[in-house]
Image 1 (cartoon, rainbow, N blue to C red):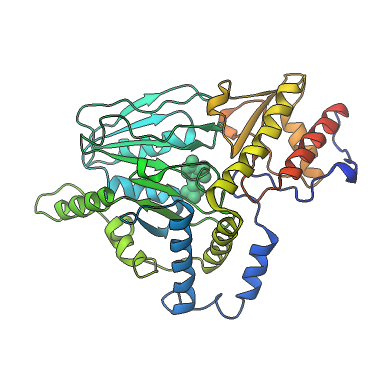
Image 2 (image 1 turned 90 degrees about the vertical axis):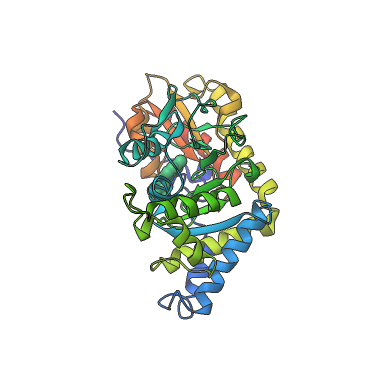
Length: 380
Ligand SMILES: *Cc1c(COP(=O)(O)O)cnc(C)c1O
């Protein structure tokens, strides 16, 4: 078994970071950290320099998503995983329906299953590599699914379940590996939430949510009823969406955020908007993704894992390798050459490569990656 291999320098990408999150952070974002080394890092998040950063992120995202005037951006600590608990505490009234087609879409459903004050959720499930959006369901007040299922590389449609708005139900979309990379009309959602360590190329630790007026109203009424005598629901301040909103409106967070994450995210949002916003970012990711899918279609040892081309993700690309090629070995040899984090989602258990092609990744580097994989496989 080949345990060591040197890929010719002429084939290597300029930057070898292809993780699906954490993902590549551009050098300009790191330079922004250095530039803010004395004025931002190590200073209060309740004073103007850091509050201006948060304001710039909120305004920049509103522009990026062409957000309707009555929507707003909230943020808090804890990442998308924390937002699942925020949604259970503050957004789902009694019962939610979930589309589950991989680890991430399943995890939010599990949170709702475990919340003692919620009724057992209705789960619409399908096999990894496919997609299942929930159907219209009686007595449901929230519909939940993931725009991009990061564990499998499936991109789901984002359109309200027909009849759900008339029912007064909310649409809550996990956009963690989608926001910034995939096209969306946020008017089809009530909460479009994500963490910054994927397409926004920052560090983890924050959640950000684009919220509709209906979501804000829902949080207010759920939290009001939780204060009534005999209420079974407990909304800890850390999971209170109304508390997060009142802080966000002041360009702050409830508790101390990682200022470095804010600096890198602010830089990325400005970079995306300066280059042409959502249209530019989504076209760039689509191009990178098609380089990989086309290569896999042509290859005699690789195949796109997602069979239906209409749901193949443009931000996280999954490619199965033939049984004769050991993907773990390929991943290890790539890493030895500075090409990192191309492994499959562990619990999926497939002989697979998974590649994050977020906006920060150069399409030319994706093309180089395909050549490097070919080189490694030829020399196994
Ligand atoms: C990465 C990811 C998460 C988890 O994000 P954290 O910031 O680690 O909580 C949730 N959902 C999806 C779709 C993801 O890709």
